Image (cartoon, rainbow, N blue to C red):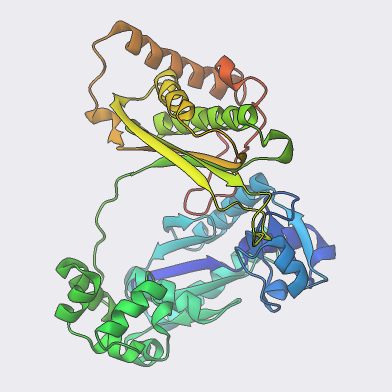
Length: 418
């Protein structure tokens, strides 16, 4: 099979940005956190911190135990997006970027003589040099080249940090056979157990399994056939995706862990979600809200600070795009919550999304006015600044719940939705 894709994966991206911008952090264990609190978790760790067992999701209190000399840095999301854009430009100066997969991953297509292994490897080295030149010498990446996007991504994972792996036909079986099952994209612990039930315990056995067996494992003949072909290097086109949800959640700061504070943040999240939904061209037909409570008195205290109790509710409504209509549904759901408890985290999600081009506008003038008002608010905020205009129920919460780090979606900090 010819080499068709080159995959770029930035190494410890968020922590590397901090080390690039602050030379005093270089060579030191660094963890990026969303806020200064012992109850939060690390969202990124430098390789120096990873050597002590600190990783994404490690609670701050645990990271301190694992690595007493660790340095915690509060995330600066705009700087990460700026660095992401520099890296995209750097890669694009060597090879057109086919698709941005996440804030720290992108994929390029190879054509013509670029598919020759030695040529692809040379392009990979030029990309690394371009990234160092435009983003900084601490912005390292691992690059993988393969016959399809999945194998190119797996190749990038084989050598970290700062690796470059080409999976040509001659190297394909040997390189795949030495992997663990969980090294294959989408194979977590649960899927690994399913593979074990069908007698598949090694990557060699997975690669040798017939399509029928893989279909039984995944519970879908089409998915089984797809994996069978991908493992063998075929370029299997992906199914066009459709947006399923728009959601936001936020851990409440201590001063807002009250019912009014939690509701104010929930209103703020609803404003953001509705504006985002309109921007990407969808209408919603359902909404859900949730609250996680902090338990102050439990027999086994949770050292992270999260309570073990939570509440959630949802409802359906005629498809709409306007903020007032969605806020009314959120308010109705909020009034149904049980009394008591100290709110620790709130969240909301818009579901049953329908493309705006397929939605039917309301026949009622009042509802059409709400939609017009919402779009007018978007236009004003886009022109004059984030949340210049908003509904009174959000009063006092304008600067709360700011944009957080995005992984699969890179925020452009559009003032319409910030």
